Length: 366
Image (cartoon, rainbow, N blue to C red; front, side, top):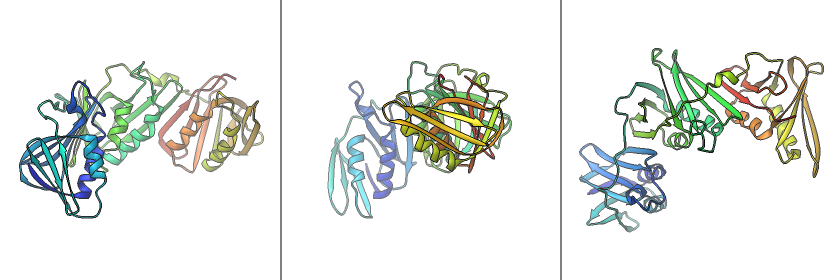
């Protein structure tokens, strides 16, 4: 093998691909490596941890074809230290890979690549959809935080994605809060659903391009294919709960507030929250104000209020403040609406004018 690649291109590609390799593997060292392939169809970098995988194309000049497996951590450390512009030449000699540039030379001991596992691609995909990569990234990075960090119930540690009526809906929940995000599809007739582990979705989001991505899936894997390569994740084999049953159909009170007012009051109030991270929301339709209250026996207490458009009945209900702050990271609208269905019932938060997002948070004991 003998190839020549721009330093910046190689550094950025290795940084992305190395995230899909295992840090340590006593049974299969090839999983800790990046497979570098130079062939007639160009130069590719591959890595997999058996949960997710990546096959990435990069620009470069191939002088001699070949395949080599390089320890991902070492490869990433070397390429991240590149300085200046210019090219780097990679040449395999025996079990050594030489990296040569104008400023220096490194030699890396390679790993036998015969044991490198193939990256599974959906064999009989049920459907294929085309989505802007930037939209998919926003979905994954925004709602993945609402999935459960525990794998005791794997379905709750996953993002549920389903296509119906020309809409892609993505849902995640840890049973205490729930986020639902929708985007329109160009193909109105596509139907299907799959569960992708939330941690896999986060890794994939960081490697997705902004351009269009073709998503295909079967019962076991889903693939994200673009002009720069392919990303693959195994799917969760479980049944997602019927989350629509917990979304209140009606509310007893609704408040529309300026996002900046709610955020500022929340930041000041949470300083006084107790060990359970509890704060209380009080809807007061008469004064047209929303109150936030917190008490900590060791610190003191705080009460904040600000103007709001409130319709409905007076209501006081407590929440974990961390779940309320999550809502602010999911929407960027100037105003948000908070709808409560009553004592012991969930709170619904939406961005005013944004029908693509619904955020639900369960209350704490009064």
